[in-house]
Amino acid sequence: MRLAVVGATGVVGETILRVLDERGIDAASVGRFASRERDGVRAASDEALAHFDCVFFASSEDASERYVPALVARGAFAIDNSSSYRMRPGVPLIVPEVNADAAEPGHRIYPVANCTAIVLCVALAPVRDAAGLRGVRVATYQAASGAGRAGLEELLAGERAIAAGEADAHAVFPASLARNVVPQVGAFDDDGWSGEEKKVAEETRKMLGLPDLIVSATTVRVPVRTAHSEAIFVETERDTSIEELAAAFARAPGVVFHRSGIVTPRDVEGTDLVHVARLRAESGSRRHVALWAVGDQLRKGAATNAVQILQLLASKGYIAP
Ligand SMILES: NC(=O)c1ccc[n+]([C@@H]2O[C@H](COP(=O)([O-])OP(=O)(O)OC[C@H]3O[C@@H](n4cnc5c(N)ncnc54)[C@H](OP(=O)(O)O)[C@@H]3O)[C@@H](O)[C@H]2O)c1
Image (cartoon, rainbow, N blue to C red; front, side, top):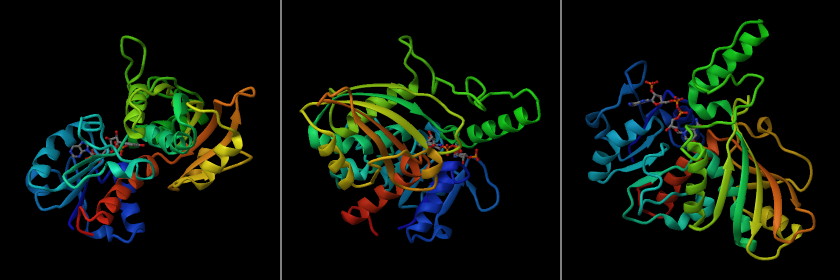
């Protein structure tokens, strides 16, 4: 099995290499590609990628759309962190803890869902299974590195500028992020929803297998380096209780459940699990609960989920180990 990463110099690409290494796959043997050549990294091209059996994309919509078709046409696999193929009918959108059954032998394109939607779905799946889901409202607190290396560097430069008493410029984010919160992630449509908010809604419905689920998101960038947090408000289909949901979270794969106390982005940075805390019922209701979820969006929201998909395909025998 010859593996490659397109986007190996980016924050997701370098995390994919790290996670592969952690999981016993010699990262030195993995082909590394970016937009241009430099030390140990080659410029991506159809010819250069023609030697690989499975390619992780951690680059851009353009690069995925440019290189994935030729790869899958010759039977190779693409595990793609961009949004290019996520909502395409017949293409599975897999979070192994939530919908591993969606992988089938004929599939060659495996998109990795939006990082905010992955954290949300890992937290919602135990509720779906215990009491059904009717509606989800979520407000997010998203890290700067969710906007790539350039986003992280803009936050750090802003912190330095403010400390030095200088003006902090912004180009990646719609307003300066240092010592601020910015309630826009992606471009707004005519109705006022941002691109990120629409991705969270439609991808969550697809991953949970609930096409009619009400999902309403307000996505917000906060001056955190890594890990996305989410305040989630859920309406269930059936009556439930905090005890029933706490038990469901305690046994859910991929979840660390905190019965009491809090969990913050800095607590989970560098880890692979989604942490759920602050579970509570809304004013005595048996169908309305609130909770707090946090996950490292570079790992579980992107790289770890991508490597888990590779491992899932190997465990099902769809791809050579
Ligand atoms: N950051 C996150 O938290 C996160 C989470 C989930 C999904 N994603 C998605 O993952 C992908 C990568 O994001 P990132 O945050 O890692 O971005 P990033 O830090 O900006 O890195 C982008 C990488 O893509 C490469 N690249 C750009 N255009 C390319 C092209 N035409 N051909 C080949 N390589 C190209 C860049 O290479 P150069 O160094 O040569 O420019 C760089 O290695 C994006 O699709 C993003 O939406 C990101």
